[in-house]
Image (cartoon, rainbow, N blue to C red; front, side, top):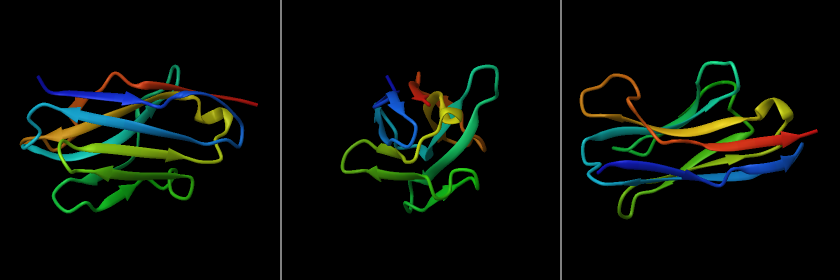
Length: 120
């Protein structure tokens, strides 16, 4: 069974940092991309950054550049990380890992997410 499991969320004060992890398990050979998203209460899920698994090239949205960094390990099944720096209360959200699999042109598989709460 294919799974994405996120960890590393929690409560942090404004200006602090967190490192989130996402471990993929199962048959991921048809996966093309893995990335990070976040969803604040009452808002849509927003893409932050991710990787093409074939060549490891990272890509980001403009809003994530400078404060958020994605990285990865692919020794066995893929693991992707999201480094969050200088967190602010508006960064409070559920952060989720996603994958684009097979012939899909969009991200189509998700983990359950990890809560990040930033206090002022």
